[in-house]
Image (tube, rainbow, N blue to C red; front, side, top):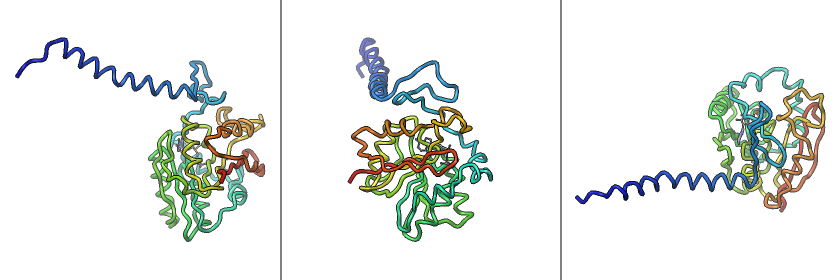
Length: 248
Ligand SMILES: C[S@@+](CC[C@H](N)C(=O)[O-])C[C@H]1O[C@@H](n2cnc3c(N)ncnc32)[C@H](O)[C@@H]1O
């Protein structure tokens, strides 16, 4: 067998090494179209900025006990949130960033018998806890979906209402997530943000975990999302409920 000259091997190796770095450069360029990065930033943020807002760190599954705490109803009035969103039997619902399933558990019985809740999260441990609690409560109309940082992995045009309770501010790819979430909605479907009020300094939560109505509206205004602000429902003690509709 003829041996490859040393120069050819060198060129081959450089090629192998440099192809991934070209790809990385293209990826970085695509990212910088929507995002900027700062070395100095809030210690609870990731140093990545979208439309002037620093993205928060993702809450780890180690915090499940905090999500499941008994005082939550008193502090957040989740029952009022559920009432405000007017779930109906037969609806296809997506709980994005469902965590251990606190809200999924309340919504699933309301959309039975034909309706389903797609519980999406990027942490397998959250989905495992969620599946366990669904089994314990004999809830059988929940589909767990392991999403990706930039994709909720939902079928286009399939969802009546997608909601995010205390989640959107931690998306590391808010542009890509919103584009796919908006596409997953049926015409007239709703995309709902439940976010701690940034406008109120008395709300006891870290700054990077709060969002103002103005900021959410600004981030939803890209024409390719085809989203229209519908209403802001301020019935909760600490959070806004901000509702957008997919235009028909
Ligand atoms: C603060 S917890 C809220 C959980 C739940 N919504 C609740 O209120 O009990 C935020 C959740 O969002 C999830 N999350 C963060 N980024 C996500 C993404 N890109 N897609 C889906 N889930 C995401 C996290 O893994 C975490 O479970």
